[in-house]
Length: 399
Image (cartoon, rainbow, N blue to C red):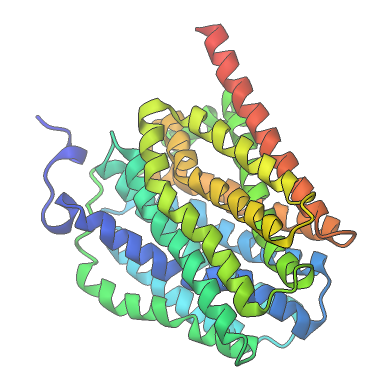
């Protein structure tokens, strides 16, 4: 009898349209959160914030999102029709970021952004868990295609926001950013029942204990550290780079948006290819190679006297870190070997929750010099490389 996860499913679930639908949904869901990368410097100017406070705002935004990842993953493994959960996330995002646009001080804004981010966060373990179940032998490629949607949001949303900020203030730009999730919330209603039905039994306490045990082994803890430091490096660069090109290189808000968009676009185009490579040659090889290149580029950004070269290596560093994101998710699922949505919810907590400390750390060192944040990102990338290489060497020794 065929494995239920590999049976031919009706409608979208049996075709590439499933991947396309979830990628487009990912793009719409991430549109408003991605706008924050370019809105943050404008908010900082409006509220007279220091770089460390801008970093704190982004960190609190991510921390709020992190609170939703694991519950959403567990809930996804419990319900048979995750499409209805995915539909709900669009409306949560739209309403949350709309309310954030009316905040009158830093702490109210940070709190509402954190709550709004929960809706966006809930999408990720539900959608990626459905894909991992549907494509068990091609997880890297499937998750890479899905990741393109989110990365394209980080391409076009900051680009559009950069243009909008040249003609309006940040509140109006944030209000316009809720249109994609609201539109997709209407469109997705038609397809809510087309997402593959979960064929696994409801997650039990035994499942959670076994999952916890897999991540508290020496290898599991090392992998947690590697994933966390990886995303700290990425968030550090994404937090400070837009601020750096405006303050130090003299870019306008629209030029800063174009700079950020180019980095994310290059990263987006490479994710499916890198995901496929990780399916073929191994996750760790792809991860180690990518983070080594990114760390070197981040260091080079501190030494180039020519502005064009500095911007170029920053783009290369961010794009390379985005390249490997799908292989990171697939590596985590490979490690746990069970309960894909719950596992991915846990990993998203690490990346966008604990990993968001990279924004605070980058903001603190940027108070002294913005370029210090690039040194920090390089150190975090290379630390992750060392940990991952250590896991591989230990496994070879044991074998």
